[in-house]
Image (cartoon, rainbow, N blue to C red):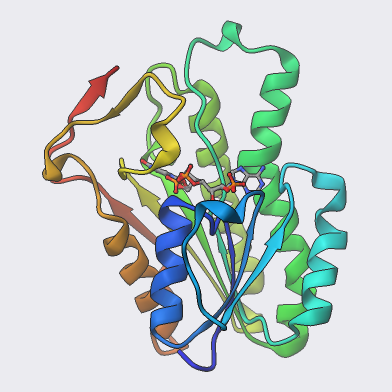
Length: 234
Ligand SMILES: NC(=O)c1ccc[n+]([C@@H]2O[C@H](COP(=O)([O-])OP(=O)(O)OC[C@H]3O[C@@H](n4cnc5c(N)ncnc54)[C@H](OP(=O)(O)O)[C@@H]3O)[C@@H](O)[C@H]2O)c1
């Protein structure tokens, strides 16, 4: 992994934090993006933190340029940052809908667009999206969240075909419930049993495996579910 320098969005907590920890443990360099890095206890000279709000779409290209100026060695992206919002559609204002889709779908597209010229120039790149089971089938009260994750999955599948000839690999991990801060502001969470949630370590190991496969192999999609799915309402 010493030859890897991976940009991880949402590195300050949850799945992104676990991925960052694992990649650093394996000797990679990680460039992490989040709004509040104080949440994370990671201390490692190979971890470089940038603080910006990814939902600020107009400034993404500028921010990625700044990062690339400092770290031309970046050769991978884990596009992970996101949040959940659930409920009947008419409960959301147009602004809330726009903000939600901006953060959970458009930001992934714009970050990828900003990094692609660099990956094409260096003739190498790995892009891993953290999708969701919500990108595989619609769910009650999930009209917004499922829209963003279905969209992300369609984006990943299409992008993969567009960039394969440039030695750029695109993968998406469609995960079921993982015990993270994701549920803090939601009215549900995974059941209490260990089997009711996927472990962040399993996701971070998968990401490490995807990144270290021979370059003639591409992982298109991985779907993950907890051994026993139980949704607990608060
Ligand atoms: N947990 C689950 O059950 C589950 C299931 C399927 C998919 N996912 C997906 O997994 C991804 C990570 O979620 P998680 O479970 O790890 O939740 P989490 O613990 O809440 O982490 C979310 C991360 O995204 C970052 N983030 C959120 N809004 C941001 C913004 N505007 N600008 C920059 N960074 C932002 C947060 O950092 P700051 O707050 O510091 O900015 C944080 O590091 C999300 O895309 C989520 O949809 C989660």
